[in-house]
Image 1 (cartoon, rainbow, N blue to C red):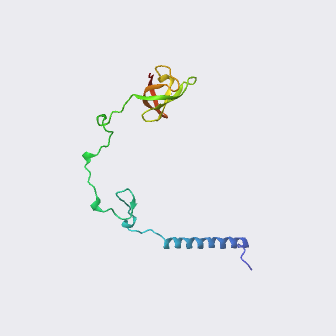
Image 2: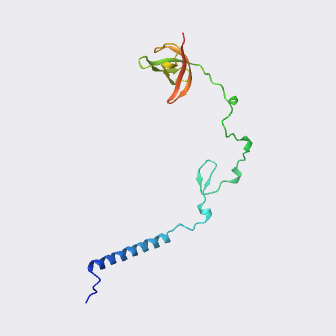
Image 3: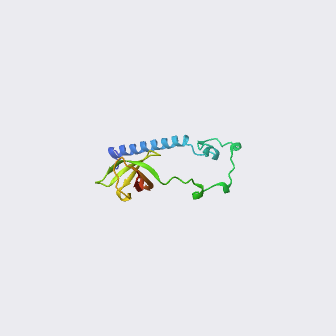
Length: 151
């Protein structure tokens, strides 16, 4: 007679579990065989060459450059070292919408387009007028301020 506790379904489940355990053990053995752990420190090191590229070879000590900490500037340079730029620019109004109160000026020197708002004008302007203006940084680029019409 058969064992009362075992049924056909239970035997198949047990066979399936055993098969899964064997497959898992085989995978584990394969991983251990191909495992790349245990490398030496030298194998794991990476170096940066003089151009900033990562390489496996250490850099040549003959190409080493010496820097003095006194020569390094970490902060923003003082204003006395900077060149003074021409603050007043000349340009031509390429577009101006009086109803909406804005337009654009083409800078004659740099050929860039500068935004203008009606609040930044000292007198009324229209398209193709020659103007002088100063610039300031706005949220979307350069803005013209103190715009005056020239004759």
